[in-house]
Amino acid sequence: ADRMMKDLAASATIDRGGYEGAQSFTRAVADKTKTQELLDEAKGGTSDLRFGGQIADLEQKIRAKPTEIGPYLQLSQIHRRMGKLEQARAVMEKAKDASGGNPDTINELAEIEFDRLRADLAVAEKQAADKPNDAEAQAKAKEAARTLNDFELREFQRRAERLPTDMGLRAELGIRLAKAGLYDQAIPELQKAKNSPGRKQDATVWLGHCFRAKKNPRLAKRSFEEALASITPGDQTHT
Image 1 (cartoon, one colour):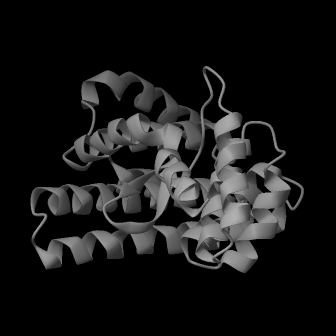
Image 2: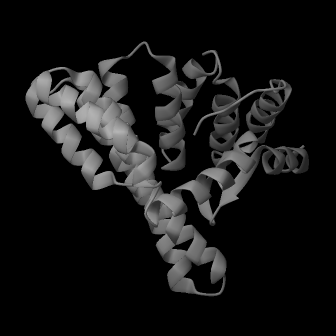
């Protein structure tokens, strides 16, 4: 039974740079693509020519109605797509001040920090992959992964406290707790979230990791089997 559980775990997960806590198995190809996008953005992002007109239009809207949040959010997201995270941050700091701390501006500032930390991780993982025998490169990749997870954990705790009935947020929180090794806290969050539409695979895979870490192969095996049984064509999972 333990061998079967290990096989299911291997099938259900993909190791990221040796860092404990694998991504959901149906994310394997998507993660590779996203990593390349982050690397591209870190090198300078998308051409200014593509978005120049949109940026000018949104800046005009902000000048005309400085307390309206929508144009700030759109402008920030364009800057993020271009890899210009400091410009995006400046836009949202202005929006936060103009709106008196609107929750959407705080969320967007957190998303910008997610982008920065994910880009740092993508670079560190690429360097670790290029230098598999370099202990320093491997350590930097692990540290970048931990830094990202620590920030995500704090942010999803904040969001879940604000919206306690949002099971999608509880799934995100449970995954970050599991990655941090806080299995006893992660398990109830994931058990609540696994019945949320679109989150069953992630929640049950991570429940399997938790039970495996707690040396409960029976519940780990059951969780991985439940995750595998839930796969349907076109399913998408989340990190």
